[in-house]
Image (cartoon, rainbow, N blue to C red; front, side, top):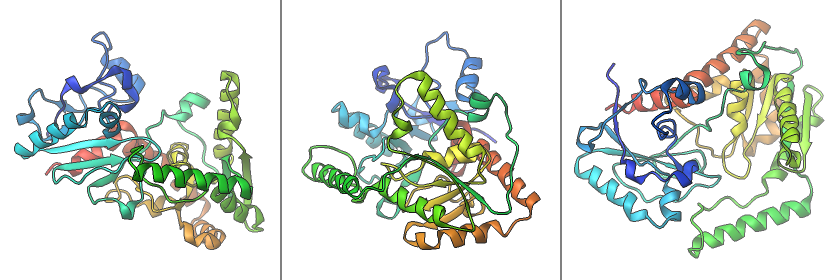
Length: 355
């Protein structure tokens, strides 16, 4: 199958803002001496995987090289709009990315598709699509192996390692911060998309309480008051990261619930480790919903159905024999490798948009 031809204007690239580079372009915005073997090792992507052209007219699709937020921050939004308009004149689709915990409210253009991790699905325009958080494969990085043995327990083991806070005073402070940030958006002080007014650390604590109180589930939970337990030194960061992944390995299921932004990095870490997410949906935007039957790969629980969390986990768990359960764990890692890595996602996403 012929590859989709992609065009991007290199003169938009700003090396001082690497975190804002369109994800697929990051492996290719490198010094000339950077080899394709290095690219494959570092990013899992080869120059043979995608086709880039030098002229917009020859492209199937156009990529905005930097995030929408970059153009806002650097006051170059007209540069982005000009590319969108030029592409429209040539009947070309533009793909852009919105980054950060909150993302931005992006005007609707008929020829634009927006990729983003965060946002309230039902409030977003239909041209917004979910993109994974791209992570380095944790198995070889943390454990020096390419596969992790599967596990099964008759009474399901539910894991979580992360920041929570059940304190009401802290919850009030968090909600006030969200409200003030929303006000700042509406008066034009910042560009962060407004968020639901809530305390996410309190919501996490509320979710975990259901697990800890259950007599039919085994809780394997590490609650922290700060992100990564406030680790600053490299040795402490490595220690807390190992604790985090050991918690995943030692569990059958992992609670995946949003943090500051309306998405869960833990979802991708769990799949990469071959475990089963318990996904608490807060109107999230998941990647490739037309290609991935997400509810086959995880326990899907709407946030307003938390009172049914135990029941839904048990119901899901009882569908499988021990062997079928282990096969699902294996299938989840395959799903991550095939569809949710940098190469896997963009190959899938671009193929579905060939027309």
